[in-house]
Amino acid sequence: MVLVAGRVESGERLLAASVETEVAPHGEGNVYAPDVVTSGGRRMMFYGGQGREGHDRIHAAVEGKDGVWEKRGVVFDPPGLNHVNDPSVVVVGGEWYMFYTRAAVGVTDTIGLATSRDGMKWEDAGTVLGPSAAPAWDALLVGRPSVCYEDGVFRMWYDGRKDLPVGAPDAAAPKSANSRRWVGYATSRDGRVWKKHGEPVFGEDAGGVQVTKGADGGMVMVYESVEGTRWAASADGLVWKACGLLLPKGNGAADASGHVTPFLEWRGGKVALYFGAAAAATWDRNEIWRETVGAERLRAGKPAEKD
Image 1 (tube, rainbow, N blue to C red):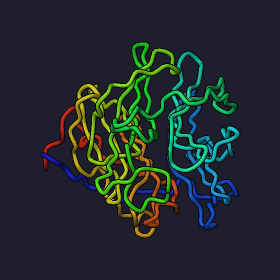
Image 2: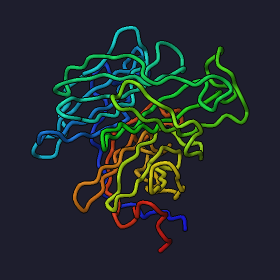
Image 3: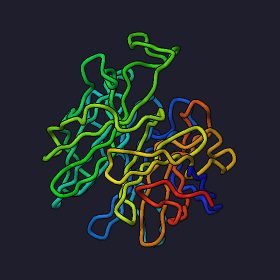
Image 4: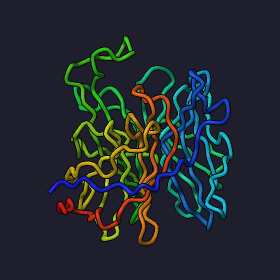
């Protein structure tokens, strides 16, 4: 029942590092975590960029009539934080909500909220979802949110950990040889006060997830891996079935080490997959790429049958 989807050799590089807030400490560039939003006829991409000093900020680009993405620079960089990344943006009644990963130091991430009226100027509301009390599965950190809004409710999927792998560069964090990421679920009426589902809704060491509705009303989750973009399917967003690789790595050196923080967009009968193409095993040299995947292979709500 698990399907490895055939890739379409039409991959294109959309964004690469070009300014100081994107080149990373090594100087070779690090942009990733794309999130595409269409509102009022305007298409915007929000993404993370790591600066030369190691600080992450959220940038924006606007798609022109020719399909080329034009950078608009840093749009969100609240003071006092080092890690500001992984945007998930939804527009509700003219108000823009950006959920994002934030950390002052180290890797003890929480999930924050910022709001805007135009997608360019943002007001930070601070942390809205943090780790649970030990020994919960997400007792150390939570981050990389994916949020949608339907029927008056914000729905969030996110990844979390209770410890880090042995050898992780954080002396203060608990470590375990069995450290794993899990995907959690939470809901909110206003985007500010959240109720966690409790137990994780998906395992598979999945992280950097994005959840979207499929063409038939079911739900599709894409997530990062060193092999490429993996996916899972669900009827309700709570019970998930792992479906294997959606798009294997295959752009040569560009994504030699896998795909980081993928994003799936349904547009008519076509499906576009955006992802951070990881050139290095350290996942700190990324560019934003896009490829088309076959919509028929995403039979949401159940795994596609093997051809």
